[in-house]
Image 1 (cartoon, rainbow, N blue to C red):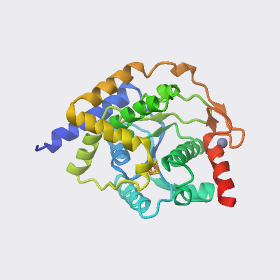
Image 2: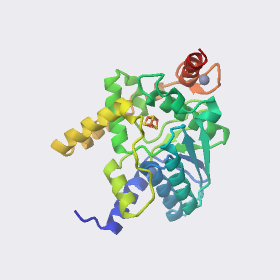
Image 3: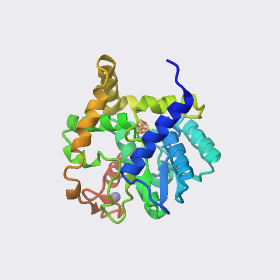
Image 4: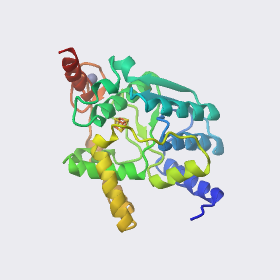
Length: 286
Ligand code: SF4
Ligand SMILES: [Zn+2]
C-alpha cells in the first residue's frame, strides 16, 4: 500500500494537535519536559511539540531529558538518536543515569526481580518526576501511544489493579505539590502510524527491542493484542473506546502522600523506588 507523505503527515499532526487542544495539554509560557528515549514514540512527541509551538505561534519552553538506565549495547544507540533529533530541532537535552542516582546500572540488578521492567519503570518514573520538579517544569510529556494505553488498561485487569484506572487519561492532575503532571500527546495515535511517520519522513530512530523486554507482562499483552487485531480488525480501537468512557472514574478521589525517606510523591510511604533500593542494596552488599 502506497502512503502519500503530505496527507499522512497532515493526519498525524491533526491527530496529535487535536488531543493537545481537546484536553488542554499545553498552555502559553509553560515549561514542558519531554522524556526522550530515542525510540519512535518519544521522537515523534519531540517533533510534534516542536511543530505545535511553531505552527500555533506559541511561546512555551521545551526541554528533553534522556534516562540512561545502564543497558550495555542497547541504550547508547538511543541516546545517540535522541541527541541527533534534539540538535536538529534545537531543543536542549540532558542525560541522567541510574548509576549517578543509585550507584548501579540496570545491568547489575537485572535479575533481582522476576521482571527487569519493574525496577526499571519505577526508577525511570521516579527520576523523571524528580528532575522535572527540581527544574520547575509544568508538565512531563511522554510518548505513550494508543497501543501502550490499551496494553496498560488490560494489564490492570491481569494484575487486579483497578486503582490505576484514573491514569488512563492524556493528562494527569497535579495531586501533590512535588508531582509534575504528565501529558500524553500521542494518546489517540495507533502505534503503527507512529512507525510509518518515522519511516516516510526519514527520521533517525532507535528501533531495537530492549534485551529485557521479554521478561515483561507488557510484551505478552502486546503480542496477544496484535494477534487478535490481525484476526479481527478494530479490536484495539474498541478496547480503547471502552476505557475512554471509564477513565474519569474516581480521578478526584486519588490522593498522594509524601515519601518519608526521599520526599517524593507516593501512594504509600516509603515510595516504591526507596523500597526497591533498600532491597537491592541488601542483596548487593550481602
Ligand atoms: S523494556 Fe523494560 S527493562 Fe527495557 S527499558 Fe523498557 S522498562 Fe526498562
Ligand atoms: Zn522515596
